[in-house]
Image 1: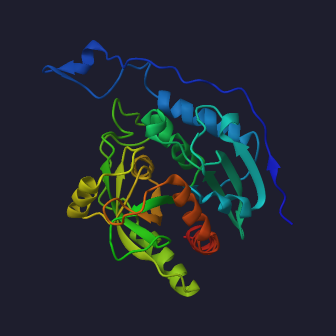
Image 2: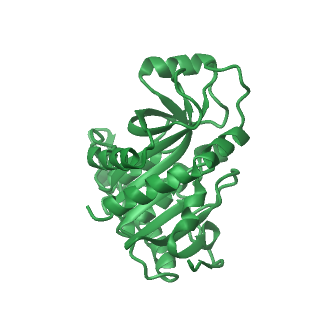
Length: 316
């Protein structure tokens, strides 16, 4: 029997909001350097460390693998062995989601002998959160020492031949949210100013997921994920545009998290559950309830895929 400890609230430390300031020496040839004044150096790193410290006060587990569980996919977090569950509200700088299907917990435990941390739900830009808040959870995973992260999401399918319930390994993304977690002064303690995104989705980790699916008899599609701001679903014209751009699935998450993780040198894999066909592909009225229901229907296959992937990624 697995033991689950739900840990309570601690006082949250609210991040300060300041306008970036620069020293006079940072202005040359009419341009402002990306290096801020010393008072701003390390601010992001400090906030991540505060969240990490709060987690380490509750568990000594040192996770090697991270998983982000999207809409309707949070049940996997409750399957971890030796589970310790920490509400986001109990951690500094980590906001809670108000979207149904996003429970808002960090789940720490094991799959076999591999220590794992799961985000049971995520926050989104369309909820009014800052981009820094949206990626704070995965940045915390990276600072905890995680070397590989599997991001999951519920997505709309852009291919008419696909069906709700199909699973897609993400090969690349289109970030159409209009923002990036790297905007503003760069904190060199977190990552480089200009991270390379050529291999944003690690080929080796994608291969592991494909092999786990094949061994379990779970077919997996592959394609490009388009990330939009939301929260409205896309118009038929927007869906047509996305297909012309080369996307096979569309959603409102994941891309910003991938950018933040690659900035910190973490290997990334992503899996989309196609929960509905996008506007113009079907005459059905789109709803979030349908998204959650379809994702939950694939629970057993998702547990198999995630468990198998973690067991292998945690040893690589």
